[in-house]
Image 1: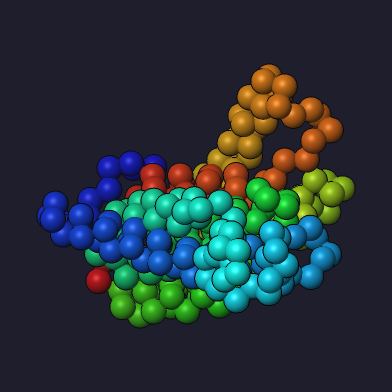
Image 2 (image 1 turned 60 degrees about the vertical axis):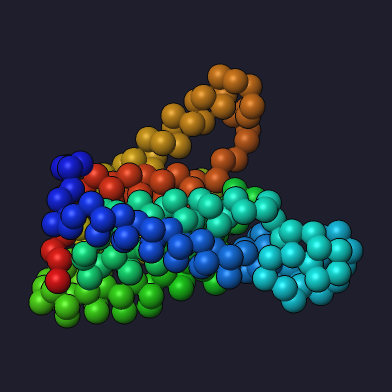
Length: 251
């Protein structure tokens, strides 16, 4: 895949896209912080409704209105999302597909945060990817006059989602339903870019997980009995594949 992406924009124009993307990512993560905090509970439990420190009902965006405790680690979610969104707008500056990729980037960081915290990928976020991506990529297909890209994106989601479903059935609990649903959403985004991106993104998720797991084992931070969240590696692999993929059409 070609890592040198030509956007057709000057330096100032490209910088404007990156800054706008980072701002959108930061604001979106700020609005999602309470949702991430609510959903960061073990599988099978209802969403969290009260502050962990004082028991006050959750009603604010960032901090408890009574004890002012942050919902989660301060600013980490916002800054990581801003970086991801900035990278994606750099990659897709001038492309009608930019909103779709920023959308999955924002939701992806939120999903990774929940998965790292409690090892689950909540339906409320994974299922949201499907209508959001189809609508945004549909708009991009109309804008660029290339409906075939939308069809390929949908097929990419079906193929990757089905592949993960088969792996989940054969893996006896190694992959969960959340991983399967996330794979379908990732497949839609990678499918827009082409089949090489789909295969590369899927493979990179497993490679990254293997490398990190071996490093943690060598450092004795985990044992062979530990379960490692796979969602963040799926998303990281997809991000790398997207950033290194060939250029997409612009409007």
